[in-house]
Image 1: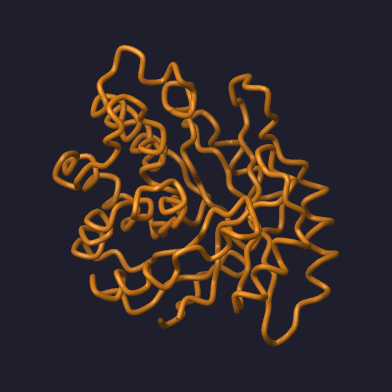
Image 2: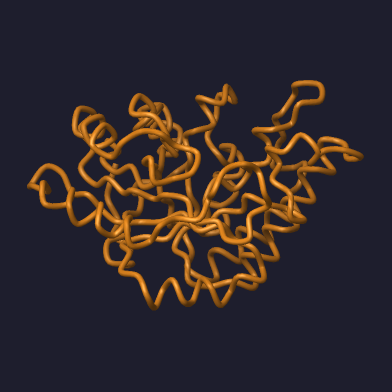
Length: 268
């Protein structure tokens, strides 16, 4: 059984209004043992009416306050979701030096300086052109940047295709660039996140899709972190049971939890 939720948010994230106490209560009720808060920290994010820059000091204080309630059945971990952009290498290095995190997710929320959430992102692009542009940006980031532990929601872009409503793709649609991204992660010992927020987004699959996860396994990828990307208490550990069954069918027999930036394997 999956006992770790390694990607969650609180009201310190610009797009979340849920207090940490409510999120922790939900995690405890769902028998999560390792619970990692990974609030957003996106530097140089375009103006959108939301500040995605995290108050790092407040985040640290919040963690220390609520980690006092840790016990044998529950451990709160201090993480962060860093918005990857290829020019932010020094900022990522500074974050590694200045902060004492258990876990850093690296997530691509922008491609060409635009968030796919922005309705203008697909202007002048077909669905597959928009997807490919996003994956090209991701490859550049994972190739050039170091200092993060897991690549978050690898196919985040598909959440926001609004054209014909057919948001899904297959591994074969982008096999060349997928193989480059996955091979780079494996070579650099960076985990691949299995992000179950795809289910609340009505994709009926996690990020990335199961056939991409299967290819990752075929290439020798063993490090997977599992996170709900929950911004609401009810979404903590969402669809973990179904996801576990599918991951085991692919061949995975364990998943990864980061504590003090070190990976620990937990069996299903």
